[in-house]
Image 1 (tube, rainbow, N blue to C red):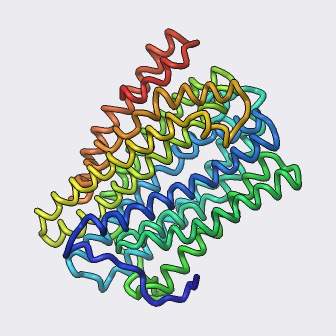
Image 2: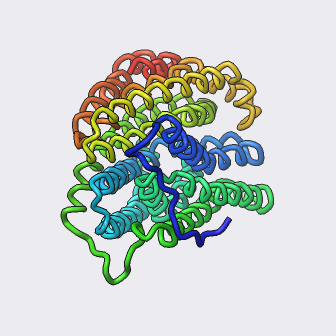
Image 3: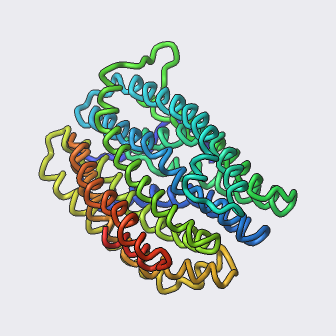
Length: 430
């Protein structure tokens, strides 16, 4: 594979049949997200098999907090996709290099901010989340090393968002194939070979993040001239910054509040002990795998609707919405049922501990099996963002899902603190 190709693979979203183009866009994007998640999954599997359940729980306990920290800026990257797609739809491509430069400045700045903040508050946050004493030291170590890679994570996420805006989701996949294989190899080297436990898997993830960020940046700079940053000429423009933030900040706030509700749920799970933490954390990866397809079709909705709406093709926007909705529902339903009914087989990828497996299967039966329902609000919210209404889907999701989860935790779940199933069923209810 060469990095020297002169053209980014673009998709003509304004003309011709849609379904094939949507699938070509969405499937590589979903696979990219799955590979990115496999960074953490590989961490969990390696420490589960080569260390112990405490180490596995230490890695698993960080997921909700990491998502809380990065979701604001990941949401802002959606603003980049919409802004670039709009300018392409209107045929105004001459200043896109300024939008790209603005986006990359946001990426690096936010990454450094997250690095410093994450290292500073790792221990107090994990204490606040009632992380067990047997796990908290390892969890804090993992988290602090993990956040060293935040600048790389942000550069990759914003770079992938830039490539998505022109319909290219394959190059981000290539980057993650390379960095994902590297991550797994380094996990085995550092943990099984060097005995570094959770520190080893965290270091491996940081190195893999750096590689994926570098590859995506090279793809941008050596791809379509329209996307290249022109050093010395590209500038941060207030109008582009305002447009990115107008779309991206509400999406980011929605993601943050959603993650906050999950942090509250994780805190409740921590009260069941390290076996529940490990089992719930193992099961949640399969929820992610299903959700990544939902998210991919949501991103397709943002990009395709964004370009067509800017071009005034409103009937085509409606077709895009329904194609993405039905495709997302169909694929997520098949995956949810497959993972749920094959749960015991799939969970053994991560652990052989019988008690951990039972907690994982409980979560799969009461949460994973309903994961396809997320298609309904994700695709609808993405269509609204694509036409400039970013605050409305954020408000509806926060009130209809996140607030309800938090209320449930502090009322119903608190009244029955020993009932793990009662805690889990708030997911499908919300």
